[in-house]
Image (tube, rainbow, N blue to C red):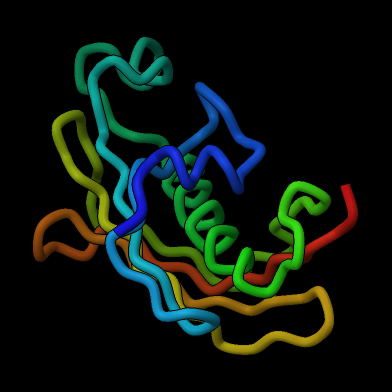
Length: 143
């Protein structure tokens, strides 16, 4: 299990856009499982929706993308010299709302990679409830 210190070392994202708190599982070059603790203190809850706070779906997708990025580090000699961009979302579905107090579990699986392009399948859950899924592509570029 890798903590936030490792994530900060290999990812360029910082508050308020660092969306992964911990790596809880990792099979090198195959899949990764991460956690995002959803807190009422997140800045987006001030406006989305103040009387019934719901985590925006696009930010759940960002959690998925950052989790995949942490798996892509396995293929990089020096992550500090690279950036990862989500290049295409093929299929993204939301099934349930994510609210403050939830712990979002992301399971991202590498389906295919060639040169600097990667294809992933990911599923998100809160407890045993599936809340979102996505199939998408990401690309590694020089910083």
